[in-house]
Amino acid sequence: MSNEKKPEPATTGSLTPQPVVKKKRGRKPSKKQYFTADVDAAIKEYLTSSNQKERDEIYRTRIAYAFYKLSENLIHTFKFYYTEVESLEDLKHEVCCFFLEKLDYFKPEKGSKAFSYFSIVGKNYLILYNNNNYKKKKQKADPLAADEDEGVLRQLGRDERKQEIKDFIDYLTEYIDKHMFTMFKKDKDRKVADAINVLFKRRENLEIFNKKALYIYIREMTQVDTPVITKVTKILRKKYKELYQEYDETGYVRV
Image (cartoon, rainbow, N blue to C red; front, side, top):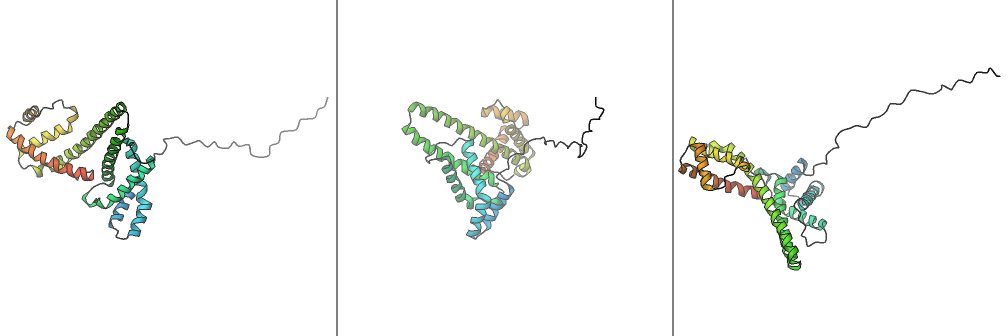
């Protein structure tokens, strides 16, 4: 029997274990916003430039993509799918051309936000476009299917209108809060205006829709006579119309 020792295993080379690289955990980065501050700046540069070649370059490199994405989002968000073009890509192109036509009508010096302005004008354009094509389709479609589509279209219009009014009332209440002392010089007038503004802010929780009941409610809140309430409401109604016209044109109210 041999007494030879078995050879020792080779020890050449590093036996130090390599560090394990752990994958970083966390939320995935969100998608890049398409209507950025640079787009706002580019639109202002476009409007101030009188050089058409420079304008074309600004539009192509810094504005066009934002307009494309906005048109895409408007079409899919509000489901403007009644189209007479071959594909939605063609419709997006038409909306982008409309945005380009409207660029010179945008007035950033008035405090309007480009995203709000082009969202409003783009949505209005698509509503008219969609409704006109819907009517054409309805003339050819099955009457029962047309009635069902019309119901969906009406509901979409109502939902959209509700959101617009909600956004505008939020601007309105903020405006009244800020300009209360400018609009009303007397304490009792301001008291009524403030009470009405509170009702606007809490409108979703109100169960009173009758005009006479609202007058009584405001009178109980303020302890003032009805003629004062009437006077204040007339002033607020006039301001409402004035500010809504601004909102309808620009998508924004300068508070």
